[in-house]
Image 1 (cartoon, rainbow, N blue to C red):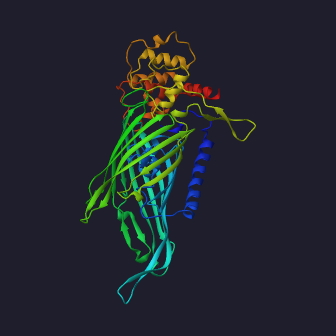
Image 2 (image 1 turned 60 degrees about the horizontal axis):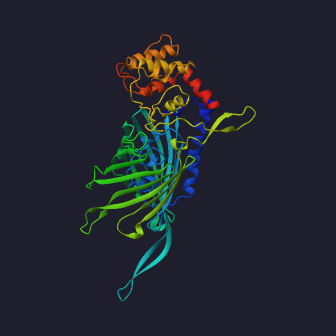
Image 3 (image 1 turned 180 degrees about the horizontal axis):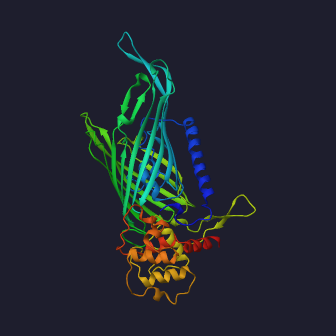
Length: 518
């Protein structure tokens, strides 16, 4: 669902252009400033992905809905169409400093993100070996160098229908030594690669994610080139396939004592290399609305005594905090059996005001005499146990339920996938016009269940379209939620579809605007 799905007084054409220009400015600033502060070490993209994914054993390809999606699966960026920021700092093996930053937002043409990650090792001694008359070998340092490496990400994601999204990363690698003379001459290089991601969400509680990392063939520029002798290195294709299950919670597989628990699993494989398959496992429990506990297992490769490739099963864990739209995450990640390899990572991010922060401030219309927007208390929207902020029709459902235009059920559910009858839809449209409906029971009277084709004609007449046909409704934007899927006029029309299409009509938009001005 895109940001322009629900009318927003601030989302004028001019505001959208300013938003795009501001985002481009951030990208330019990032490209200019981060090379000045980066310290790096080899390929960083297996670690510098954010504290939350690390705490979950890196089983994140099927989730990836926050800023970490830039690094774990760009297709997830369009699943949560708001400004997302993530940053991470950490120290690996007591010597390597990690830094990463990601920022993404949604525009009319899709979700766009920029990411940067670096890690670094300083003061590496360069030595000469001297053989003494007694046969001893003395190592004499003659200089020191810093090894630097960074990866820049440009990410794009688009949601083609409510359940399917694709994503693309373009990556630019930079690696160099600070001492680049003598034997170190030419010890610098650059490279290009690309990642392809997809995310499929067949149910509200289940999503599948796939990332093809380093998918650009060498013949098309997918390689790293060292300055010395123009030596080229290919980057092996890596495929991650993961699943995410919302076990308990809003829109979860089950409802249990208001618990919010998710589990995720992922397979990782190098198709072109003779390496064993790796497993990633993670679990997340939101103990309260603002505090989460995380636990995971992250398998990785290790060298065996026989010279082969073995597997380490590394324990991961962490905690997360959310407050006023900001996130604070900590991850503990074991790397192999050596205790000194255990590392700690910290992330600070921003995800906007989701379902946990409905009573936070919102930006209202500009004061007529001022330059800056007025901060108003965000109205508390009516919520349902089977609808969360990630649901494709969450906003229209909650707005119209708060306005009393569409009803929920006494058990605090909305049942978005249930069929809506002709009588119920007529009651909804009557309330949208400001008319009084006798009783809620009347709107729930048992009568003929509507098909999608029949319901769209009713909405076309309600909106005054001429002629009142499905084609006219599609042209008016009523069917955007279908994406590229078939219209399928004989399919049962649902309660969620009713709220979504109503939000596209002039009368529905007027109702929401009036509500936001209060």
